Length: 91
Image 1: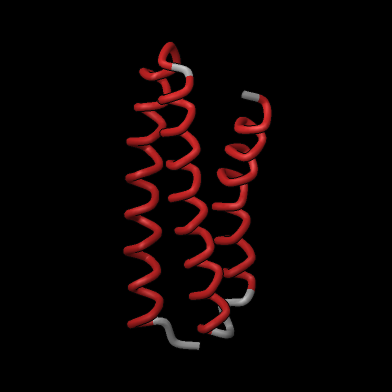
Image 2: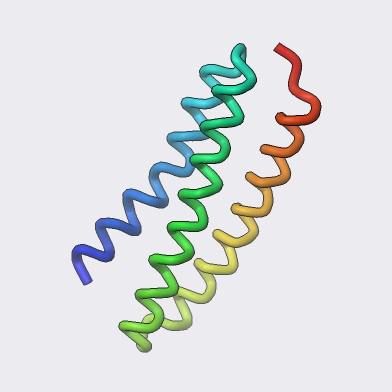
């Protein structure tokens, strides 16, 4: 539980960290895109960890399901923004 919790925290934290770092490099479109891809991947990783916790600890299922849904929405928003940057961003 503690190791999985640590992985979950790191994955969740890296979502916004990668967005911030990418935005800091927004002058270079390819760097910005790269970090948005990392952020999207971290959101998916977070969902994966939550699904593992849900299976291993059924008593946490309700909480995990709410978080999975929220991270799924976040993941879709990051992906949409990533596509926007790829197609419309000008440096």
